[in-house]
Image 1 (cartoon, one colour):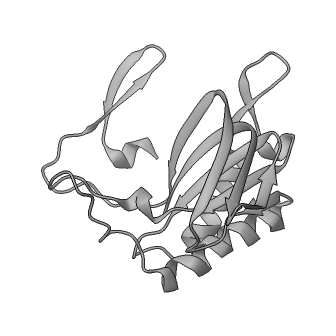
Image 2 (cartoon, rainbow, N blue to C red):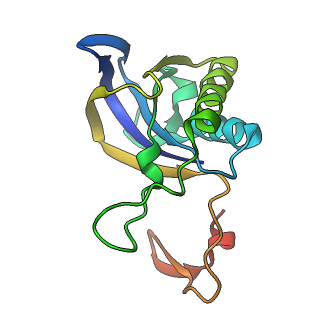
Length: 174
């Protein structure tokens, strides 16, 4: 399961020219589901989102989570997060879960966030949506829960920190 998370000043989603979900300051979260995802991954993702320290503290440092402040999240399902462009210019959606599997898992993320105390607005699954947001920062983070393992023989992922770079395998980055 993966999510593109954007810290926002405000965000809203419309369906058929009607606003169906809106938040003020908080996180706009686009959630994608793949075939191997389960309720367990959905709950892990919710916990990661709730505790993700990308909100500014009094000193302007990203040291707070949405749990520490606004508590607002807009969650929008987005199967296109599993688009694969490795074989050309037209994405393949084969890695995206079918709607029958994905919808309950996105709803589980929403319910788990609400159980943690979040104020959650949502889009509408399988609807043609217009999402408007004002990115704050800008801050945009990719969050993955149990990402697919790297293919055998693939090079290690290069992680760059404040003091330069260090090479780490995907399992070391967790």
